[in-house]
Image 1 (spheres, rainbow over the protein chains, first blue to last red):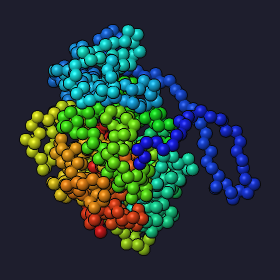
Image 2 (image 1 turned 90 degrees about the vertical axis):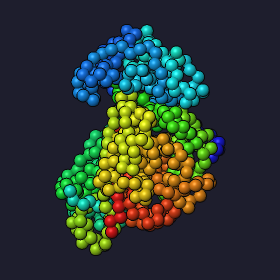
Image 3 (image 1 turned 180 degrees about the horizontal axis):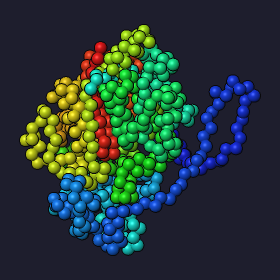
Image 4 (image 1 turned 90 degrees about the horizontal axis):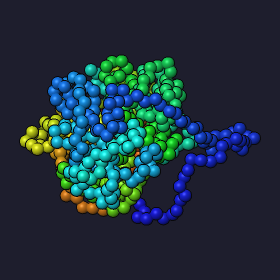
Length: 177
Length: 437
């Protein structure tokens, strides 16, 4: 294992020439030695994703409110909403989570899925609130990623909202309180 | 239920990319190896095998639906039955158990299980995006869907809760990479030290490139039989088999969204007491309740009450160094909170192998003697079956024959455990194999 990179390599990219023809041997017995032909097959699609029963959560974010649900029967209080309680099966009711919570767990992502690569480094946190039985996943901003340490756990954080909602859960984000 | 045996297995050499073949011939490499190892040819295999189960995870990676049917015909197994098993990272472990079920139920006397993944068709970051679709696409994926990030969050909580250190995590990588140095099937065979792990690129704090498994193209195959099936194979091949008996099968689940996991009481194993965990809120995000449940179920079936004493080695799902440490605890190899100290003691290292460190308890119970996912690679659908093949060879005492090197042979191994895991602990399977000859 090299401690430092011994060689330099240009990053591999996906763009390139479209293949039209390849050399072909006169002697068919040579074909098994042929290099594989690798072609590009684009695949792009727009889904119509319904938030369904969770829609009030996203409407709430667009209106500056972080909503979740509480079981109408056993009282279990969720930090991320679900319509039906996973402990008793009863229907839950909506309520507004407090603006201020605490970091339960976190990370700073220096790489990510292609969709989020350009946003790196970004911090992810699971937020906890007193009296709320489960957690909520969000981005933490306005923090120095280089200072990541387990001391961040327990830090007070406050929710803020995008003015122009994009109707994704990142319409709410957290800052150190 | 009928007794079920693993009679043979095969693995393709895992690689970053296999552009030389489509998935069918790659599966055939593993399948042919398994047939050949018990003295059967292709036609005899097709005649004797009653049906198969196929293990592949992502339709997105392949951009090909019903790949299982295409493998079935390539292996000459039509018109016999086949079905697909899928459950994220645990696909292979679930498929192993589906193969066991097919024979245990009496439906098949001989069943083939084959698994594969071709992850090289997209770049690594697109691949990570596909994998992250195995998290809630309404609430989790859009926040920064990245599995390495999810596991990193879990380990920050483990570190806070128990004082686990990044150097302890790095030791898992040291162990598994150094083990894989002697495994010709592994994708990454290198001798590394703690500093190498910590100096490699940070991916999701505190996990670096060398704390995380890579994507791979690869395949694995396992052949199951009951006693009747073994007789049929022995009659056809004229060879005496060295089967491994499946003595325990367990699996468990947890909520897909980590945020939804409860903070309650520990599910205890027979050798633990409630007093051990007085103030522990469980599983939270620091532990895998599914892994504990699966272990408990499999241990009960195999009558294991003291895992460290009664198990000779473990092949577990180390997609992350952190998840290996967390899994030691779930499986009861040590108590909750002691995973970091457990690896630091050398307990899960191979006995007698030089890793460049001195350990007080080296080799107590080797974990991932093969090198695990971190070093072997993780072609998702193949991974859980690869573990079964390596465990089978360990119990046969045939590592030297298959690896062309005896270094990784666990001496006198009588009982091994394989563990497969998906989606931050959403699906976990634990299966127990014992020497059966």
